[in-house]
Length: 164
Image (cartoon, rainbow, N blue to C red; front, side, top):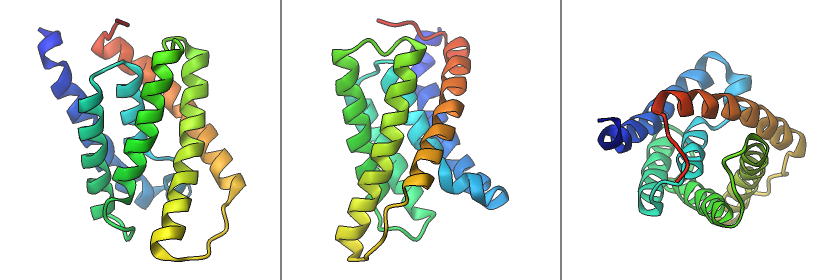
């Protein structure tokens, strides 16, 4: 029964994280700047080796929903999510990402790359001269990774997703 409901549960997970992100940013502005919950949900879906098509559709739609709630360029987060999830999916084909240490490293690298890709896209599309904030990126990647590994453990137990 849970096998057929799994895609709908994953879609609701991403929509819940998109909804939760502005609330966290409103009530905890320091934490809201550092972590990206929809990207964390998309990385979980990527680490569970779901369909690449599902990941790309969810990544682009979650990015558009994120951008509709912010002042960023529409599609910027979706493009970033697609790039990062494609990278994580391809790394999952080469290495086993079912262990906690490899998930930790893939999620941490993904958060750092997400901030770097966002910065590059803002500089190119907005024609701004922004300084890349390394300490904020490293702090956000570390905090997001710790929250992500805990969330991955809980979601693995709830959804009972087994490696294929």
